Length: 179
Image (cartoon, rainbow, N blue to C red; front, side):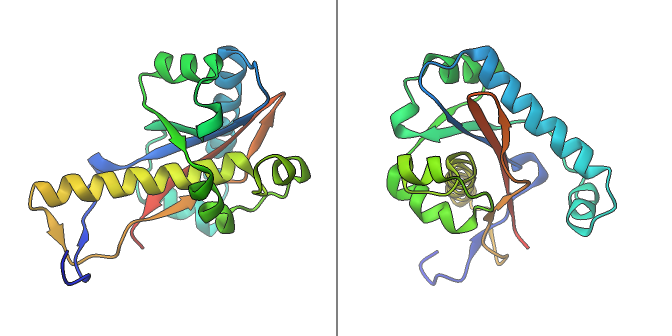
């Protein structure tokens, strides 16, 4: 990509859906799982609505398969988050403060607590977006290594819905779009 004009081509097999997690210290695996399930259930309900954004997801044949869990680097050692990622067999992404803040412009929820604690309006949404971005860059690197670059739009993270609150855990879902 020396010219800056080639971007990776993402196949359906390379689709990602990232769960961004924000939480209080000491949450359990069950609490994290409940938040992820609530977010996925909310997305499923939204997909059945005839709104244009949801039509895009249906038209793309969107699979609701979690690819990774993303959380702030300071929460990466939380046993409940680690256990949820291990139980689902997905990687756990540690999102740096700088990446959270860079992704914050794409958040839609406003939380005074999140702003005070992490300097972002929604930790879960920023983590999901930053995690999707990280996975998109990894997919591009893999495609480049295979020589599968194409002149297509650069993949960008997209928040699938606002965060869902489930007790002491918040969860937002993001994916990557090339539109």
